[in-house]
Length: 148
Image (cartoon, rainbow, N blue to C red; front, side, top):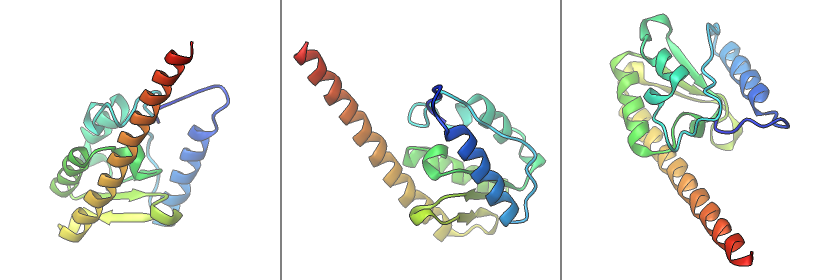
């Protein structure tokens, strides 16, 4: 999660969505990686303190549930690395809310090239969204500086 403010409901919503998703696939939650105030645009999954620690102990679980793909990665390179890690460690990556709002499950335990393609296409969309957001913020800041 990239931003934590006093009025945000996102941490609770993400946790609830993850728990509901885990239950729907028959998984038991054994822990969380929240990494508050850390942007997926600036840190790879492996560089984030809590998520990186979980990725470093793959024998402890079979599946990782994320709220949404953009909570996991914001670049195609990071998604490619995460997919390679999942394939090497026979892990399932599940996103509680995929495109259109439904659950998205990418089972890399089977070595499916289609799952990897889907992941990269979705990562491309996340990367484009991240770039567009950065451009809007930069433009907004420049406009505010000119107005003052």
